[in-house]
Length: 253
Image (cartoon, rainbow, N blue to C red; front, side, top):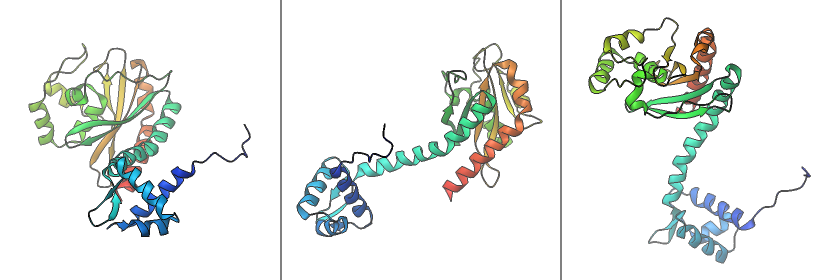
């Protein structure tokens, strides 16, 4: 393929996008004639494009003839923010996956729930089948225990009071006192030693915000026999967690 060839561009798509940019530049909206001037489009073309955008939900005509962005744009905006986060998180996870030869996971603690944001795996490093949600299995996962270990005693007790410590494998910790003791880790790593799924071990480190408050966890999964080697790489996991922390801080700022 000739790399110097110019890409084939669709002029009508370009015109529609330029018109949407013109609409977006006016928080209070603008009339079609003004939008046509700013987008450098014939007025008739502008009306045709605006009607098409309105039909698809990307533009809305107000009763006084002013045009504003449609609801569908706001939906896309919310989705694009999530995709932008993935674009920043995925390289960090992929680099750790390739370096350690493990599947990598990033989760956040949002409104009392643990939500997986992204997973970097591959044919040689398959992900864990998340057959049971984290809301029901925090006690059996490295990610869940990592988050629990960062909570104060009252919030930790509240979790134990409202949650059943479901027995997922013969190795799952189902006794509250034993679980609380397992949260104390000298090197800052939380482990799942075949407690969630037989044949899989996991390790996790917290991801905090600028104040030190836990916002999520970075975790890896591998064969249980590899966990000691992963523990020896704790500094590498913490460095990746720090990179994720900086990414979240920049987005919040």
